Image (cartoon, rainbow, N blue to C red; front, side, top):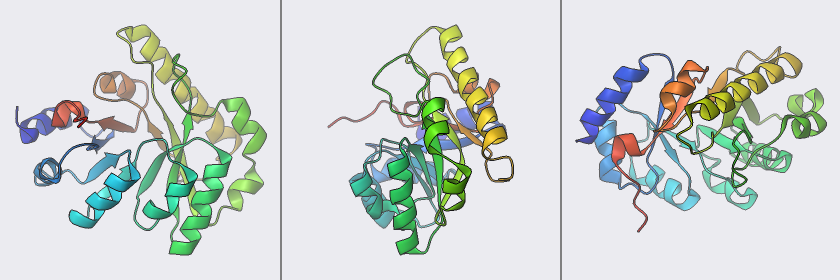
Length: 223
């Protein structure tokens, strides 16, 4: 099936319930261009070098999201242009993004990543960790970072009840943070959860942003 057709089907299913991030990692510029020509403007990448190259080569009105685990020493390469960093999983990383944002004269939007899956390979905070380290004073001192919500990945599983419970957990974490730390922050609105296999469940459980790759572009290219 063509990219245009796949994209049309997915957009029809999502409607206006959530923002679609087309995950274009490992995909050639031609595939991104095909989606772009269908009106898609938000794309997600998980490798800094690949993202900066695509930013240079593709239309400048694309909204680039960084969706992978981000190393602190790589932040400087994407800070000048990235629209949203999904996987902020340490206070150290928050501070580096703030520093690099200052150098670029930009306020960089970020999501706090929580570890909600049963798998140990996923990155992310626990609520206890955040409560200990992320204070209102620290948040107000971040002149060049705007924390706009949370992100998480469910366990890769056919067990719908498990996946649903993990999404419910992320929604609870969002609600708790909104109440405790971001009550006065009008821009703290995003819950990024749901991928090709589980995005409809995620939307039912409160997702505002879904990250879909293989259902649009086909399986990932590993070469």
